[in-house]
Image (cartoon, rainbow over all chains, first blue to last red; front, side, top):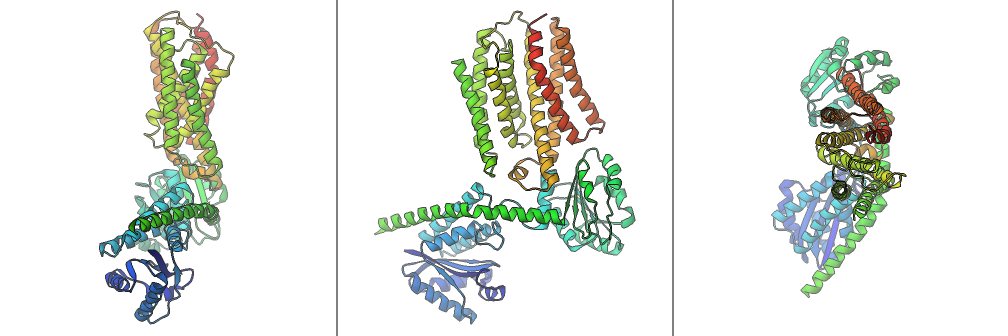
Length: 339
Length: 261
């Protein structure tokens, strides 16, 4: 018995092609049934995400099954799918790379593991899996865990907003009950604030030169709006300050902040300056208890994180190669026992 | 037998320390069960050693500088095991192991008497005083370690550099809280120990009294300043390292004077 994998992903097909072959939840049972009806194919799992549509199946004659699968997809979409094809052990290697985040658009992202688990669970629910597929997917989940634990492939955050949230966690620990102030209602600051709110931040105070805009954003994210001239009055309770005004000069200087910090009883202050030109004087970072990050430093961390992840790829590939070997050994043993 | 126990404890602390250095060097340190098991095993060996030593000396084994250094190492690990997990500061163990290792190694290598010394005067208050004082030093030692971790984490956050340490060190706010609470704990224990010392009514050398009072007062001043919000966490971290270093330096002198009227 062989395991075949056929599909298309962000490497070989643009989104307008991928979307033609996407399998929504409502089409899943019908598509699984159609795939399983292919002659010589037993069992199937369909993984359909925004970046990939992949079919995993057990078959005695994978090349013929692949041709039939391509015909089926052509019939359903009216297009020739630019499918890639892997037979054992390539299919196992491909799945192990996918669940480990090595094949993802953002190297090392972890969401894909949940998506694969969901796809496998759905196929199992429809009775579409076989012992070979069960073993393959269970093995893949173990590989993903092993790779994540033993390497730094998932280490760090890979967007400016998520870096800011991660740094807030490294400064305050639990963000529950923390207070955020937004100066200047920009798009990035709004996204960052929303991420912080999702992590338990208690209050968001929005201040903007145009009060109406501050009020609108405050209403959207469940915060409070204050007039721009009064922001420093609410400052002493704030833990995280996000600046993104269009001011041509620094609105927060060391001279202004130093006396305000004395009122904070040693509580740290995380300042995220997303504005260009910058809203916060860089010497503010030298004040005790103040941690200032501007766009360059946040993007620098994203770059460093991706560098770290890229440097881990070789180690991940080695682990995966070992695990593919283990899976193929099992497959051979299993087939030997059956014959 | 007792020497073997001590060597085993030293090796356990060295193993934990070595693993930390190796993992940090490889850029993939994750505080794990291995570190904890090594430290806990080392603690068990040290406890067994101190038990045998106490039996041989007929009192709490704090009758020589050798005893004090071993007991100090033991109390440091004791406080770590007691509070480390409560603060979820698992990396504290990785930093505790080297200090515990250096204290035991110092006891081994220093040109001091390593033979059991029976206590001249048996007084339960003075035994309580001595043991609790060293345990208080254990809390101060751990405060010092939390202070070192605070300064490291602050450096990471201020410099905007990503390293495995940034992700593995606890949040800087938690470290500041742990640092303050451990100084409080040590100060409280030392105050009780001093009260027990007074109750023993045994005269002490004036220099020992002054040195001990200065250390107690030093930590007291830190706490008062912290309470008055005039001492930022960074300074508390730095000063808790300095005061503990001074306390360790005065330890041989205090021990020497303890054996004299």
